[in-house]
Image (cartoon, rainbow, N blue to C red):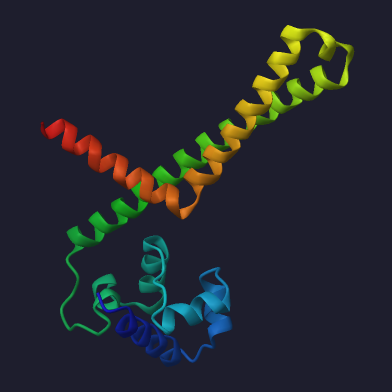
Length: 171
């Protein structure tokens, strides 16, 4: 896939509609810098945004990905498959976001428990002081897990984990 070619094609489509980068960015709810990066070939839009762009410009998704117009119509089965995969991708992202939210709530509760123990007379009791220390460590560990899994490295870790799971199932 040639990102520069795709970018040039996106620029050509935008200009055919007589839009500025800012105007088009508002249509697809991104920044004009993002549109600029797409058109310069540095980045590509996410799949769901690509589908929105294809609908707006009334072109096939395949044409955008090829970076040129095709005369033939896109097969409806392929389009439905792409839409399902985009929906699946969004569903997976929602699942990860919900998990991260739950971990953040638990982490906040642990930090609250720790602070309550530390700032009251309960902190003088050795076992509760140990619980406070444990709560601090667990909360910080959970925060780190959320930060890593929600970053781009988290995506790589999840992909690696899925490859390992597939490999183990084959054995």
